[in-house]
Image (cartoon, rainbow, N blue to C red; front, side, top):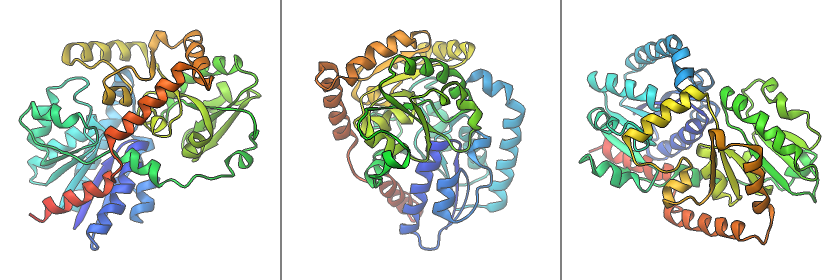
Length: 376
């Protein structure tokens, strides 16, 4: 069969790559065309139509500023999908773009699957009706999403979480410290400022001030290879900071604690059982628009995925004006203390999170269900 996949950011590319591998196990004749990145290219053996680094815009203001560019991508994508005529279109998260493609494709008579639900439960919940109308099958990765969609009289499939797959399948490099000229004795604090230009701009100046408070610790930044190295300038030249690329999971395996920008990385950090502080800051106008939208459309209480899964403030969330050096260091001090009650509490919550997510392969379960639905 012919598969067309669309992912618009780094995490979607990772999960899309694993899904392609799993689909190949089900369908030996599978051929692929996609929007994504390096992971999907490695899995499929073909280059992307468009790389996600060209399409990753974050925040209301940033999206509006790039509206003409996004419209151009939509037009290009629609034409390419119709030229390819896939047996199924598989959309991976990336809600703003993929919802428009879903509507277009469904009206053109194409079969539409959605893998990794958009976070419609967080804000603008009425979009769930639109998803139900234009998506043939939804494959969810959060355990609470089945109940959410049931409110819209829609039965969806919970397939497990693909982040679990990625963590379980990773082979840790035992030479990580020596390879990156890191001390074998000093504790490592991981810094994950995000994978978009605007995230680095908003996060790194504050992270740099935190680093200066811990001169006896070594900080390691999980850098992104396809971003300009100059974006890391606010922190890169500090004496106790190293930048690494393509080694995030090895960094987790060696870290004592972490500062993490909200997103998939918060769940990855939890699965590696690294005590963390969740930090989040965006353009002020974008933040107030999003805050207003969330307030009027849902009862969501948290932004970190693990907190949503456990329905409690298991890991500290420092959002916008609360993301100060003082607040970060106050929490980080407790996380670095091996015997603190706070650190032990987080470790217990991490274990509960793993139990709820399960350990079955989400990619394999999703591919198996997709293959079954396609052959009904």
